[in-house]
Length: 236
Image (tube, rainbow, N blue to C red):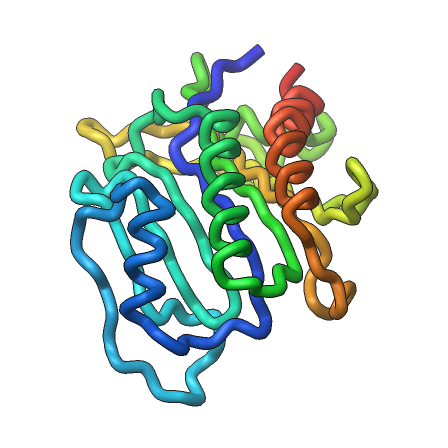
């Protein structure tokens, strides 16, 4: 099996009724919940009142730029990545899931906010031997007749798939995106990128959904294994 390395981990909660009543108190809460991880620059700028809810109102980051917290009226994203896109060695997906589980649990207990949606995203990369990543994707997932002309010696290739199913009593969307990319390393490195995004149904599909503490526990406990199972389906 191909050896994949994660380059980005992200967990999200969607909070459709969220509002900024006390920004300073919220910033202090996030610092406390994170264990003072966000010791870097605070990004915050005036945003019109009618600006789209998904635009972050402020962004916290760690000094080494590996941790980031994006806070909008619609959602909160907790992100771990290597700024140069080199493979992540610590934390792995399971450790990250445990960390964000406690972070979001504590936030919900402190603010009593309704959480309408949960999400977990992982980006992985792998080097491909003896051929380009684009040609590897084409050779692996396309029929022979398409490899002779349309996809022969292709420079870039992408596959994007969505499945909807029930998992551990959650109704989920499972997105998988396979793509040939070039990492901005020195020297630049062509790799196969796999993005896996598991999220519960959106507002349009489950408008009145409200996830409680036990749901947060269950989601972030089981999703890392499901993400590994999905990767195996494509590259066993």
